[in-house]
Length: 425
Ligand SMILES: Cc1ncc(COP(=O)(O)O)c(C=O)c1O
Image (cartoon, rainbow, N blue to C red; front, side, top):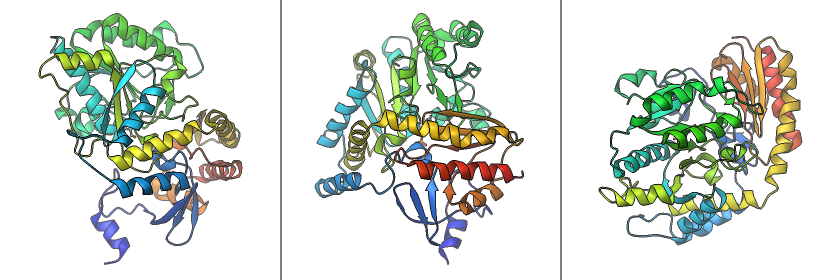
């Protein structure tokens, strides 16, 4: 059976059907910002493999660090054992995240780090003798992952999980903040959140939200003041705040973590995706000494989670090398360069009738179409234009590796303008 046959008939891709007619492109290798297909074509990557590959592919320093670690140990269990890669990474994470976050729980993927965050919040209240606090408040149009707990806090409609709604824990949803990034937020913008907290705080463990950028649920950028006020409201109503920085973390929005736009710290924070520079899968849930100590003091005296591949040494090495590379670069200047390039390059889309809106924040550029795109035709159109862009629904968006140069960025945005202009749904 040919490779193509195996792929089409025997392998699931994300949110895919077996025997799908939608194209899937075989990649032979990847270097810098370029993906090389097996037919020899090269594509400029506009997706950073879904927010992850911030330093580009096949990075010499990342490769060298991983090779070195490979010869020491690629994996060892984390129960009763520890190792330098995890310790070094923890040191860095504690250092670069908001000061109150002092303890780190490693897991394998973003979704699992969200599960862990939710369990931490529930166990915290259990330890405080408030076991009835098991529900979560979440924002409409949010996305937090595909596992059961994470699905329950995704938008029930745009979050792609409505099929499972009858078996998911029922959470409390409040309207998406409509106050935009860079703008103030009015009392009426906050009213739904305050209402939910007032009504449900007795049974609520935490408010969970993506700070500033709602990603897969709509690529929407909201006001930093909303986030600031949400923190105040959580304090006022005695509810924990979980920030999901899985997509936004490590510089993507122009701050190292998006919560810095609002100058606030969460009680629990999830990171993943760009954590390892896209080399390996790893995520982490950070929390405060207070939350950790409360959990320790309650029943059963330990935090009830422990993945097999927790703090995998290769993944931890990738993460600490990636963080070092980021901090040693002029990343802020670089993100603002990419932001300008995206703004200028995508501006012509604003004139197109097919386009509802163009928005840019940091190294994220979004073209919201009037109607959902046709994946059957738009995917090959982007490949023919020499770029890798994967829209979903009405959203055509770019989040390139941070190392992209101006010429490649121009090619990327010009391709978006051209493809969007000629796209027929
Ligand atoms: C904000 C956010 N949270 C959680 C997740 C889930 O992460 P993972 O796909 O690694 O499980 C994602 C993935 O897109 C995300 O964007």
